[in-house]
Amino acid sequence: MSNRIEFSSCIVCGATSFTDELVVTDWLVSNEDFLVKECNACSFRFTSNPPAAEHAGPYYETEEYVEHSDNAEGLINVVYHKARTWMLKYKLRLIRKHSDGKRLLDLGSGSGYFLNSMKNNGYDVNGVEISDKAVALCQNKFRIKAYSPTEFLANEIPGEFDVATMWHVFEHVYSYNEYFDMLHKKLTKNGTLIIAMPNYYCLEEKTYKKYWNGYDTPRHIWHFTPSTFPRFAKDRGFEMVKMTSLPLDMFYNSMISASYKKSFTFLPITVFVGLCSLMLSIFSFKRTSSVVYVMKKVEL
Image (cartoon, rainbow, N blue to C red; front, side, top):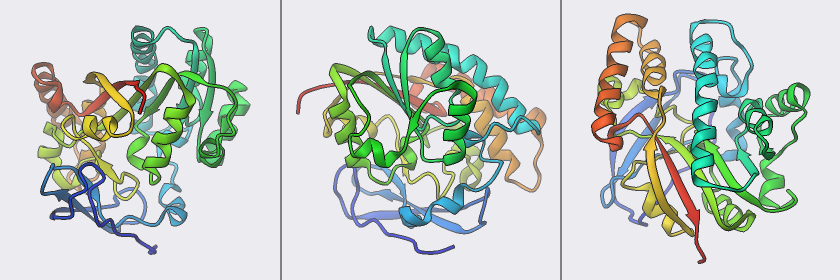
């Protein structure tokens, strides 16, 4: 696989001076190496040489990529699906707390479990999903329509929405400005945008380094922290109203990260790392494994 691209400026602050931070292997699909750089001005990190968008598809072609599958076989998939049930309830509570509206758009809707949960709780839902397999699962299993990213960016999804969500999706998005422009257009006045992403300023990254699942090169292009993402969002018409942790991610990320190492041991090391990360995040959410950013649309 080839056809890589290079980024010449920081998407947060515009600076052009970077440090080569570390080389991360694509442990999931290709075993190719990718370079993660850090901006010398604002400490934002990014995968500096990912495949061009039109060549990214093959890097998602694996049953182990559980976000786009409905496979419940194997230890990692079993843990993922069990945790998902609890997380659906957590997400519902979070959305109810920050929005009274019932029209919801989920970008990166996968096989539709989150959308179906929200539908069963009285929400009018639509999805956006790039994977044809996941779109089919969403339609066949839950009778929920998911549009393509092309349709979303062309403003072909009817109506406006009170809430838009992206659960571990935005770090994959090449057309970041176009996505934020359309999100701003599709959300109602004072609409809520919720985005969850990995946070490299966490204990698991310090423990596993190039094996840390949060880098997930080349699928993850952008590596935000609570220090960089609010600035990025504000410049695009969204005010940060809440930042919090995404529970359970520290255990899952620790397990996945450890599985990439030859000396993989599930218990007790990965659980211990997860517990330490959880305790650290209680004292400072900025050190949590994944951060949930809750924003309100403001006029540009």
